[in-house]
Length: 506
Ligand code: ATP
Image (cartoon, rainbow, N blue to C red; front, side, top):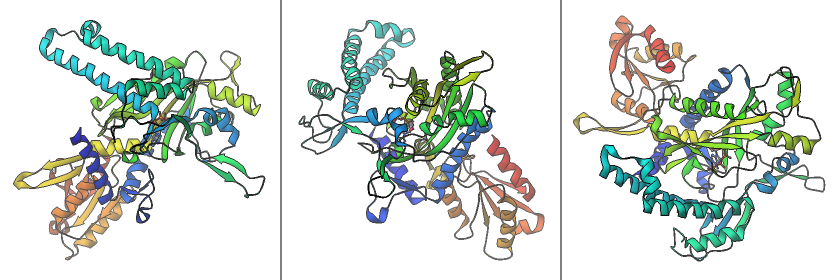
């Protein structure tokens, strides 16, 4: 674990040193849980967003994209349930003065019991070898059974307490379990209080008439309130989807772990409108599609897992997270939710406008059901960074840090270097650069020894470096160096574009 946390620290340092992510307002000592994307990070983030958009919108004839405003009519958030229910229970430790999410303290306690169960299973699997039957072991081993019962007992108290907003019951549970503050070790807790995560501000002049509005905590509602406009103007037939990427804001109680949990972040969401009764089929479909999208980036499948929700949000009849193995362990990267007709029904009720769809096939009108896929762009960025970050020992006692980014996401696709600054090499390199830059993000660099320039581009994940030398002037060939293998090949200048294109497609 310590090693993994070390990895997060290294990624944060690397992200800063190589122009991926800076702390917001750093010269003023930063603003908690707010970050700025730097020159390379912005390209990487844009490429992740484009890759998602391509897979969701461009590759699906029945999905279109919109870009709705961050500010929305305040009643939207009343209808969606956010005003009343988008809150987390918080608790403070009086000794350490540290603030926690009360439910997370209990969830962490549950995770510890689960770890004990898993340890028993691993031990037994070793002992029994090939004849080990995990299912049978879990159903019969007394220690495992006792721990499962303990977990069930805790869940049976936590989930109803959360559903009923029973803060006193959550406090009692924390006390009964003897949960101590991880910082101070003390059990000196305040009461549990509900804390709404929406940021609010005033629209209009400060005098009367100014109204309180919210910064959207999710992009989804912008899709719901536009659903009928899009359906009609796009002549969309169910099933169809509406996609959107954009900023969302949450006043998170505990915001740590770099860009994993931010107060201003970006979401990539798609709401898929389906016939009532067909939502489970589409829910399964999107679960499969989304995991395929992740593995299509070449990230090993074992770094992902599904986590089916036992406790469902008020709007959902099925929900699963795609979890990724971040340096901090497996954590939510994306949510796939079957949201039923909850949102559209609520907007019908609050707006007084009909949001029905007339199905030409069945000749019936209904409020569509919705299956949502929702991924945090910043979390995806962190997933990509932590998977790509590699320290390599090289021959001759050297080492390098290389970001093995999927080439399609890399900030720059190719760097062009003249071997020296004279003899017409820079001019030739510029010529090559000019022929490529309409199609690819290219980087031109002539300073420092060639080895140093290679290292700098390894560190930002540039898949190819092209070097122009004296032979280039004679026969129009260059060396092209591949980032991961460090193999160099002599190729004709006109082949370079094709080599990059092939790799990007792969
Ligand atoms: P969590 O349980 O981690 O708070 P959530 O279940 O509230 O997340 P959703 O409301 O389902 O998250 O939001 C969809 C996606 O938006 C999440 O899967 C995550 O990738 C991203 N996301 C949510 N909150 C944040 C945040 N504070 N910072 C960065 N990304 C976030």
